[in-house]
Amino acid sequence: MKFYKLGLLTMLISLFILSSCKRQEGIGLDVDPATQINGTLVVDTSLVATTFAEDSIPSAGYSARVPLSYFKDTELGITHAGFAALVSLPGGLPYTLPTGTITIDSAVLSLPYSPTYAFYGDSLLSTFKVNVYQLAQNIQSSVNKTTYSNDVFATGDLIGTKTFKSRSHDTLRVYNIVKGKPDTIAKVVPQVRIPISSDFINQKFFQAGTLLNTNAAFQNAIKGLYIKLDESQTTGIGGNMFFNADSAKIMVYYRANNSGTVDTSLVSLPLSNGLISIQHNYSDKVKASMNQTNGSNLLYMQGMAGLRAKLTFPNVKNILAAAGNNAIINRAELVVKVSPGTSVPFAPNPRLTMYRYDLARQRVLLQDASGADPRSSGVFGGNYDATTGEYHFIVTAFLQDLINGKTTDYGTFIAPVSPLSSGTTVNISPTINFAERSILAGKNSQDRIRLKVIYTKINQ
Image (cartoon, rainbow, N blue to C red; front, side):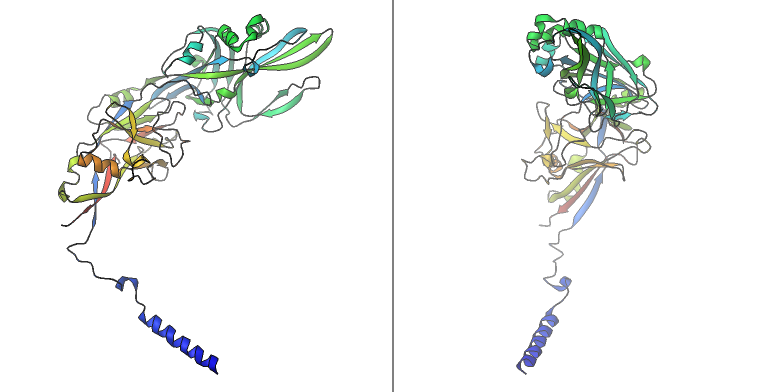
């Protein structure tokens, strides 16, 4: 019986509690209209954007990813790119030649493709011819000094060539030399294999004598290689290929005859210290865009130390004029859109970045991209949205400082950046070894660059 009474008591308490509950909207005090805070959206399209050439970039230190390019972009123009590299002894150490009579069967320069973003262009209808030259001058001094992306290297003898289709995802099967045992067939990563002159290898390696005692002496004697595409023998639109130079090597297959006993063997001469050389011949469209001072109809973004856009904000002081001095920016977002019809056949940059110049014309992060600024949200933007064709950047703190006069606009830029950049780390370094490009809507387009600002007017 007592459990029955306890159950009734529990039900009564529950009814009292439920009867006291009301909708969330009815809880709390009414908002005083005099003190209510409302957000107001303003869209500013007065920004002036002009296509701007990228600065020349130090070209050393990119051995993990070097380009071979001959790309005839009907919109932007022609891009040429090649790279120079040193040739090292096996392991970079003194080398002792094998005994016996040596006969070279073949020598091949192996150029492995980069594992990601290895090709940009037309791989289906284009045929490429690559040439390998001995350099006319030793590049060891170039490695130790600053060389730039637009530097040109003088070449000597042609020592290798190959005509090929770019197949950056296709593995190959090659002979694997096993000393003292039958050779085997091995599957290797996607690569271009270029036959190298046996006479060159014989003279520079097997007949090098004391030059094999140190890697520095060997590199000094061989001078280095320059690898580029033969433009007269490359058909179609062409493209941009990217290779891991730090995995590239000359593979020398030879036979050693010791008193009638013949064995096949392999010695590898690795490449190192890749130096990139890039030249751009821009179309009349791009040149006209670069010559505009009051904004371009189209804005051209290009990797490979190519093109970026400079922004100015002539109306920045008037954006919040209607709100007077009592306005605070809640959110400011810069939106740029790829010009319709330009995203095929060549895909836009997967990612753009945004930065500004300081007084010394050095690149610095915007306040919203800097982890040192407490106003940074941690989500800056810049990724391409294929659904809308847009790039978005959060510029709340940057714009607030411009309006308040805390920041001087010495130059603000949008530019291509490595698509491999981390989503949480904002990269503002120019890209030399990614080729993607974007054509953005300019001043006369309904999709032109716009600044979307949500601000709050504080009633006092």
